[in-house]
Image 1 (cartoon, rainbow, N blue to C red):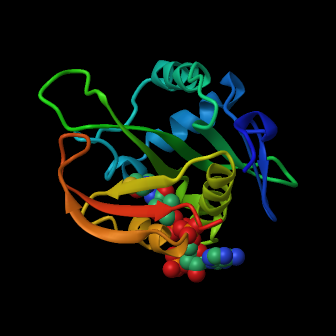
Image 2: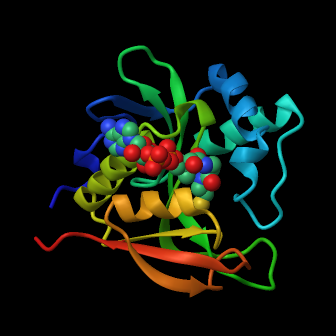
Length: 187
Ligand SMILES: CC(C)(COP(=O)(O)OP(=O)(O)OC[C@H]1O[C@@H](n2cnc3c(N)ncnc32)[C@H](O)[C@@H]1OP(=O)(O)O)[C@@H](O)C(=O)NCCC(=O)NCCS
């Protein structure tokens, strides 16, 4: 198995895509993406759209400050043109708790937030498959995804990337979610 130091978790190339770190030059895209109810409606316990550009700047800075050998929150871009399609997240998932902020559960979650202009082209599936493959190489053994019960497009991505539906759970985010799990392939 490769050690995390042998793998470039900054950028990741697939057939059509380049995943790369977010920069403040991407603020307009991030603000535009998270200003859309069609994107935000299934995200978070109390979904709301961004209304201030400053929120996009703050969130990019938070992503940039995430120091972890394997976890990453990256822009998914067209490998040829650089056009940004969405956000691919591999990160710690918080456990449901009465305490604020919620503590990490110890599990790693994968997530995807794409601009509607980039839906229905297989980009989320392609990016997520590559991130999972990279995760297995860097030593992860289990990755979860949670969706709201009615987020069928996201559930289809989970299944397309080989995750298994485990039913409903309330163990994360103080909310009831559909839980999907992927395991590292046997060596
Ligand atoms: C969830 C989300 C990323 C799914 O996006 P998506 O584009 O449907 O997912 P994929 O990238 O897997 O694309 C699959 C579609 O592309 C099509 N497609 C076209 N070319 C393809 C290719 N080369 N490879 C694979 N699929 C391809 C598939 O047939 C499928 O079509 P369909 O949507 O008409 O069934 C998107 O709906 C989204 O960002 N939603 C808002 C944020 C959100 O809810 N995130 C999840 C929170 S849990």
